[in-house]
Length: 192
Image (cartoon, rainbow, N blue to C red):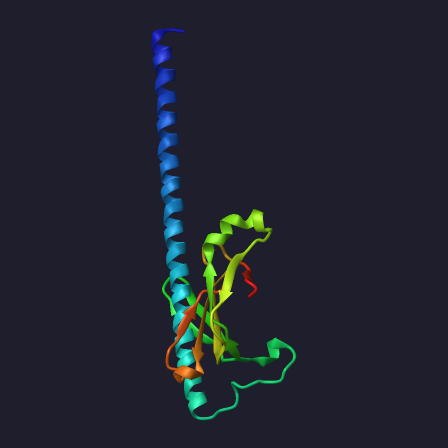
């Protein structure tokens, strides 16, 4: 092979390597753009779940002030039938289009507790797989609200969901909304 042929092949290989690097950078940036779009969509979905929950709590407070009995479902054996489902609300998002939010409420006794996250590191020693929670005080009567927002993800083609949970207490005249994070793992309550 002559020096001229070697330089030509080396030049073509160099152009191919540069083209592959440029294509890799382009694909990485496209993935980043999809991640950003999905993050904004999830943010819109969470906002819809939170705002519908606040609107529904205010509506429920009006029902309670008017002595409406629709929210009171005592005496049912199955917990599913003791929940009141509010009519679904549709919200719009620039990225997702229509977001459907459903909110449920349930009359319940709220039991405050404090979670000890430091005990999670000792899982194997104590043979459990969950956070340890210690009950604090006595339960208080109130209503627990749970909302689920759902929309179709245009990029992935499937449904995506976000949720929000909160409660109001009778002792506070249902005026303060306490948002809570629904646990992703079981709490193990310490025995007293």
